[in-house]
Length: 259
Length: 97
Image 1 (cartoon, each protein chain N blue to C red):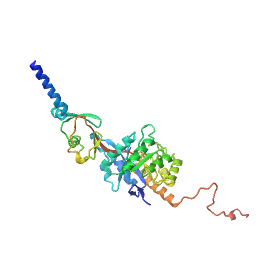
Image 2 (image 1 turned 90 degrees about the vertical axis):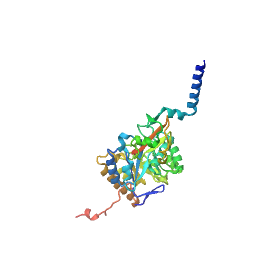
Image 3 (image 1 turned 120 degrees about the horizontal axis):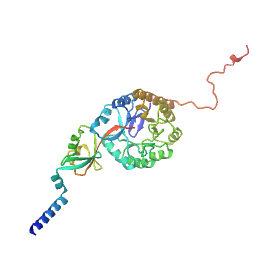
């Protein structure tokens, strides 16, 4: 498998993991290990001395070869996202930032205007900017043009498990994009992740589908294999579709010959 | 009349000292009030950010410190003394997608 290039970083794994919603820190760590993910998202939260175990930095830094990608969740404006990015870079030492600006808690759809404004600023400041966006081909191209290292169109609403409902738009984005296209949000099953990769995505980001599965570590492994399968299949050259049948066995006329 | 004049003079001098040297007021007060992670807190005056972290059992934690919208790097935390009215945020990384 060729490496995934994001900014100056290369990764052999094309499955990016979200660390939210796990039942425990140990369940999350087990899933990250099972997924072989090399890039995981984290969120900023206020330190609470009563819940010091919520801090993931220590446990995650024990996994070799793992890079953190902080997100800007909680930000409702570009200004707040930029502030979160600065704090995150200070805390993580990582140049990655997932720009995630979704002010409406009902649908959690990303705000394209605030996202664009934040990405423009952060890309100029040298961040490896990974914007979470609606599956809009024009927005994706504008973000590439202001220096984003990838675009991350949603498959469906965060945590909804509604799958790759945006596949037609994602294909349009892939067609026009010179940066990696990474489907993020809403995937429910490994087959959907596989389909995204077969379509031409360079990676997928999965959180709920793994965290909320009955056996997160096993599901993480399944997703990892599905992502590899989809990527390999695409590179192997999928057969063409046909409107009618194309026989795969010879039409043995002798079977129907008069006896 | 003379006593009243002395009281006025005393008041004037106090006003000048406290207005132009607010640190003096803090020094005299010995406690300050800050906002920590959105909650009002009373602290002994003269504490540094490092002292606050120790008080909050966060000194060995990987934590980001923001005071009045400014990020305070680890190297600066021993020397930055908290002032009355400071808004302090202590932030860590938690799970997120």
